[in-house]
Image (cartoon, rainbow, N blue to C red; front, side, top):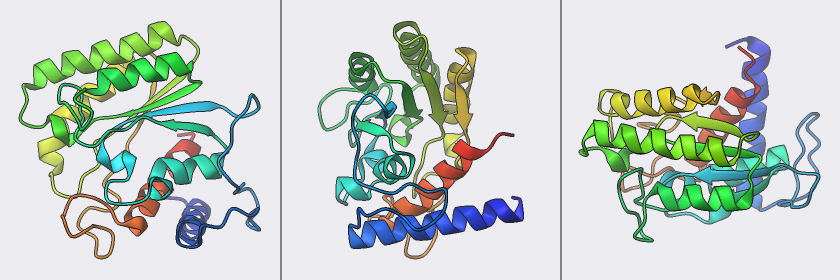
Length: 223
């Protein structure tokens, strides 16, 4: 990472931490970072997030989840459709898989869709999961031809990189095949003291902030 980028990411992470802990919605004094309340309206991009309990903020307030933190920073009109327990072929708490979230993103006419691989699909036939990924992403592209589609790797506190490799690779291929962009976020909170809740899987507020910082860095990465 370039030194100036590292400093920017560190500053952003510290700022996001202050927001989450204080509930502050006033304008930021940090140049280049717009911080304020959640937004809506035609002047802000409509962004849909398709994900699982990591994206929904399992165990935390919705405003502490990384999509909300990034949306505040980027002034997005956010619709976070993430459901705990859900995956591409695995039903979540709403008794539906990611297909239902895709439907909602399409109905929103989102300008951008962020969609993740999920460790909830571990143990399922990878070829079946891959086919579901391809179908979901192609449906998004067909219904939203001008939207930006951004895929990213499964985030987890427990599963290993080897466990997740097949799922991440399959979604990467599905997203890039339709002209979308892949964000390799790594594992910003896994195995790090203070960043994982007692269940060993879900991030703490500080862990969510670490994810948000990684997302912001990848969004700004022109490489």
